[in-house]
Image (tube, rainbow, N blue to C red):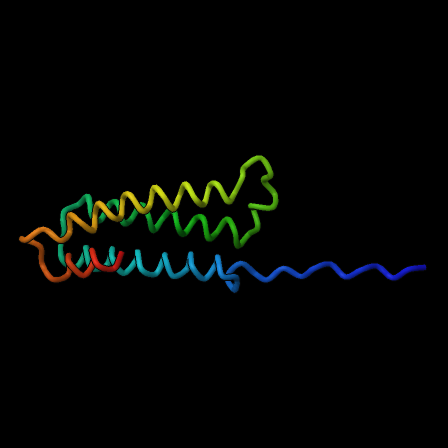
Length: 114
């Protein structure tokens, strides 16, 4: 009787390269939002960065509980690309707006954190 082949062990999401990038992205976005809150920046800056923190946190949560393997009807790599493109557009816009001349130091730091 042949011995069964061991299943390939998958690394936990948090230790994968993809997981590390998402965690770094979350940390930078939280840092930017913190700078915007401290500087009392206009509300759209805080709302957009708060939205990005929420989306990034939930995407990390989905991968940690392995929901990407349970829901097969969604093409997860395409969802990640779309999320990254939408994020880039929002955050580049906020970064450029944060660099206007009447900005405070913390608003500029928040803009550069992106």
